[in-house]
Figure (tube, rainbow, N blue to C red):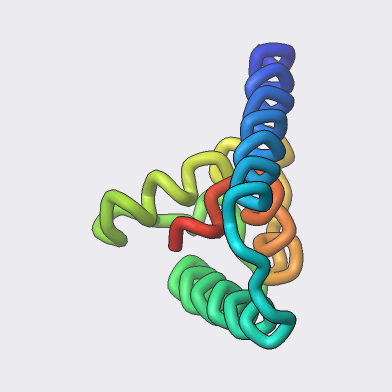
Length: 111
């Protein structure tokens, strides 16, 4: 089971890298200012999501407290890989860890 999960993670990362490479080749270069604005918007979106997940407001999210039902299909799909990683690691996530995992596991750009 763990091996399959690792293989899926590797495949997800490969697909993400290929997608990002294709986007870079196709897209016109954006300015540094535009990049900062997008990063700020992503960070803000992730912060809002994290705050909804942090039901006890202690700055940490653990699997037993996470309830994504009713957050919308798109958000539930976005959080799927993060939840899988959370199940494997059995850890509590701070906002920084949440962001890092979301960027790593994919689809931050889809928010």
